[in-house]
Length: 109
Image 1: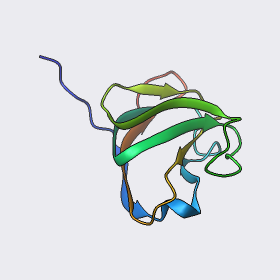
Image 2: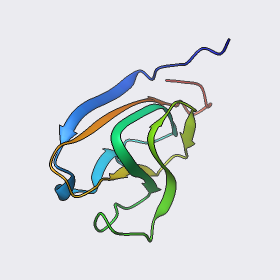
Image 3: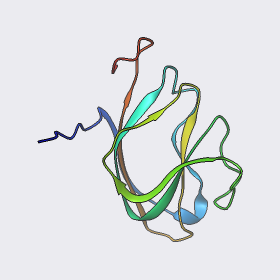
């Protein structure tokens, strides 16, 4: 049986999707890389990884990591890239994500 790892860092908030994109982790915070552990949204959101934030919710010039309502497979984000969420233009959007930062040697911090 596989065991699901929950990340040490988490966010669980409701936001106004019309004021996106929303920064989950900035590039300045991701010094050695990170692993997204669990993702749970109330709709299909677009998760973007980039050194600069998307211009708006409709900016498709950035690297799309995945689009999902939930995900439990670990997803590694390289050092120096931020994680941004592109949400629908609606008022009550839920964001529930856990992740782990990595040390320079690749172990979980």
